[in-house]
Image (cartoon, rainbow, N blue to C red; front, side, top):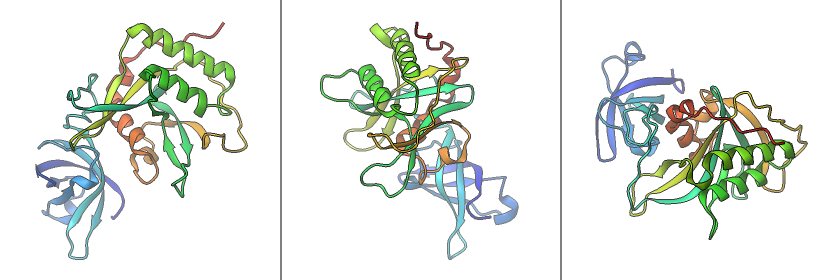
Length: 257
């Protein structure tokens, strides 16, 4: 029973903790509610929100939710929302791409200097001084995809991004990363529909100079993309928050001449 994923409804949540009910596991735990703490959540839920979680039972027999993801009913992670609003004090210091085709997203696996394991991540990074969000996203694409996408594919994606987002034709989605604290943080995400576009993934033999070890298409429902021990936080948040937004984007990158 432990470590399987279930869905439940938030019965109560205030401050740092709350309780869930779940018909999926009622027969296994009886009428007991499931304890939920904010440290195990990707965003703060409202009462009635649907939460997906791993079930654990402590030494006293209390069921608890871990690695919980709000799939509906939270301000930042209501999966069908096409507009993600943040307060005027929110700091957007990171930009990233969300390259998708149908249910799949193009993700990379990387290892930072302070990490012991490889983690799934988006194509993105910190916005440098004097750089726009779009310029940051394009630079990160050029760096992180090097050796994993053909030069022609990279140029095609750059062209598609400039055609869709250049000259403020369309604004990026703003995904909150840290909803609490004096200075909440967020990432500017540029969704780009790659359906019908042949991107050439190369058979790389090792990591590139930016620490990227692998690049591949994964379903948004892939269990790795719901696991914080396997996926970096910005990607996990973006996959959760932009389900509706990605379905709404219909334009694909133009082919480079």
